[in-house]
Each structure stands twice: as C-alpha cells, then as structure tokens.
Length: 124
Image (cartoon, rainbow, N blue to C red; front, side, top):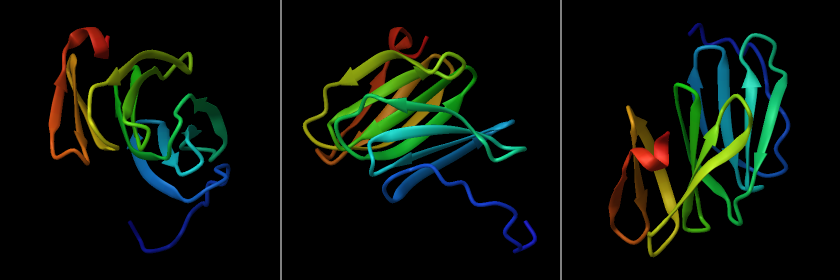
C-alpha cells in the first residue's frame, strides 16, 4: 500500500461494516442488510446478495463461497459464483458479529458470548 486511495466502491445504502478481499473479488457487508461482491480490477459491482433481516457485520471469502454474519442472529453461506444462498446458520442467541471459513467448516462469533463451529454440510 502506498497511502494513495485508488478507488471508492459505492453501492451500499448504509454504513459499510465489513470487507474481505480474495483474488479478483472484494466483498463488503453493510448496515443496509446486503453483501456486495465487487470486481477488484474495475471496481464494478458484480452481484448484490440480499437475504439478511439485520445489518451485516462480517464477511469471509473462501473458494467458491462467501459467509456473511448478521445482526439478525444468523450467518449465511453464499455461492459466490451464482450469488445464491447455500445455507442459513441459525443457533446463536444474539447478533452474529463475526464469521470465518476454513476448509469445509465455518466459525461464527456472537453477542451471546459464544463461538459456534458449523460442519461441512453448511460450508459445501
């Protein structure tokens, strides 16, 4: 990084809470309850993922999937290529504040003071 701003990506209708970058994709999540996938080279919006009932606090990208964590108490595993939800992870007793993905598993952290590990069925 040079300290010089190269681009600004605009497309959310609320404050942006999360960003992740992998390869040619930048993924952002915001208070407007959406996740946007951006083309890193052009800055153009590739897709908008909608389905949360609360603000998106965290996003993670691994392989062909995106995981978003939301104030609605869920995390969603998305198919990055098709912009479709693969699974909804519900089980926390509060807002899901963070998500991580590794291999075939997903981890989420929430305001209920817990971390949940979700198995391969959620992450495929």
